[in-house]
Length: 179
Length: 386
Image 1: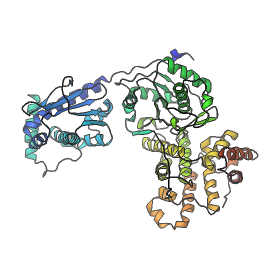
Image 2: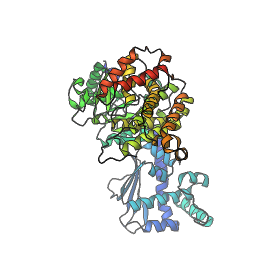
Image 3: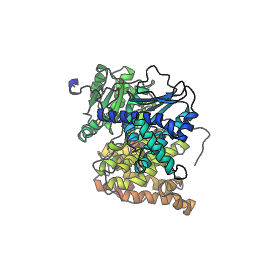
Image 4: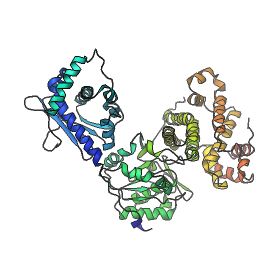
């Protein structure tokens, strides 16, 4: 057998998918920070998090990352995409880039992705559940209803999220993301 | 359901099934501290583009594929296993992945035995429980076409069987994009063997609830998806269900003694050159008829699994085994590819005796020669035992 007929195969990169996920994580990171200031439900959820809360959502094995956490004043900050030198208290690791694409193209909601074992949670489970609730809220605020319905477990009814609050939070969140 | 005072069940395989299941292979390999697998497959798999699909699933990971060897023929041969063991060592591989059914999985298992045991004599492991140490990580990726034994604890090499619990794959990966067969025959091969494995495993006198769970799930999947799988072979949902059934049937089979149909169809296939799945499809109803006729009927649970709760509840308890047998006959009658009797495929009658003797010998007292002959003679004629 000539072993040269069977060469070693090094993994290539899925660059476009990686860039898409990076952009989505960047937008979500900024949105977490914005929503923590403008939406009462998000404020309440973040208030329950511990003072040293630092959360890293990443795609295995080589990123991208999204890091958010509380600063010294207890405010939620988007802390960029480099986990080095940060004391992470909660990791949510998406097992691979394809799983991240399923999540961030809303083919699978974050709850379904969790149920299908596409995420590894390392840290406080109640905090991780809070993050999933916040992600659902952000998808409701940031996306049109048709798209958001695919991404969330249950789209909130009018009695749960009034149109006035939804639009106010949506506009303010978008302004804060861009600004 | 029978309950026993004591039972054992073993399956080390983690099953990953569904959409993009292959993309999880890097993280699974990482869990075994492995980075460089040797991939073993056949030309059919690479021609169907499944090799490329597999390689693409590992993009953006830290896994380097040591080599993709795609020249496994229809049987596992010793010289090829030796060559692959050398390739494995030369390339510094640390794990094995088999894509697709049959010989590819057998070759990968045998290579694993050789490289983990640091030996070149694979035949010293032929038999039961001759392997005494953990092997390198082994992942089986289901692809269209299967013999139904890939997920089991056995490997065939040149007609000889190596059976050990260390041979179970560590991970069974059933990806939706890999399991749609081009033709109905490929779907049928694995499904038929898995069906017989599951029916026999569920009906063993000393079976246990965990074997039941696997076997019943396999039977249910096959009953619900076989027709669709044969009618439209490209259908990914039925392909996925049948690949799952094959994996579950093989695990149930690995935890049960070999049944009459398995032993008979194996020996008959060897003697006549027919495929094992064809022999299984012909012999299974006759084996069940023999049990029914002897007033030691198989369990009525089979009807519950095959027909659902309504039919099960409305059928009197004593009639349930017969009703289940009827359903099996109906299912097999719809499979047009297979004959109803062995004489239809030109099996010489004098060869039945040889097959029956081989099965009885291999059964080691569990299978009666007279029973084997009764089943084979009726299967040859196509006449009912009852």
